[in-house]
Length: 122
Image 1 (tube, rainbow, N blue to C red):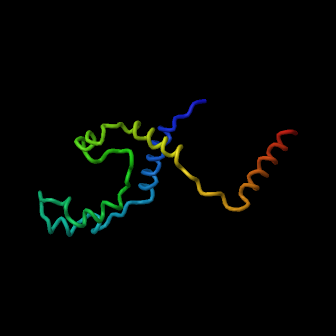
Image 2: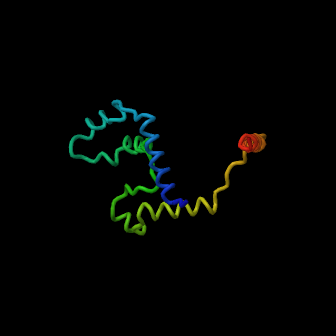
Image 3: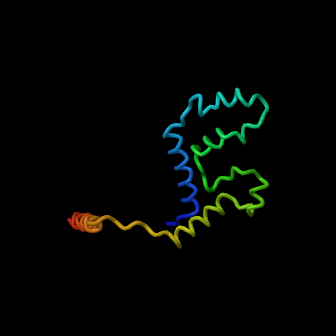
């Protein structure tokens, strides 16, 4: 059997984005910037408005998808999503330090495996 760690990182990114959307996106006068739209007016700069900065932080923040534009993407090395995912997977495999299991969990897991092995013998 083969396994692609880069694809796993991409799948994880998509799952996070889906979970974010399923959690609900607040839609109200503030998040729609109704007052800001009235204040700034049509065809003006909404991006530099403080409300835009405030509300952009509540959006999903993907690590692999480039939302910065082609010039920035090229300046950052023109890596594809898959190339960035493989680098992230390698980093995880080399550096991740998992939190230790709570007391007793290891023994519980060992007992589950032993019980399953006993069941299989019959």
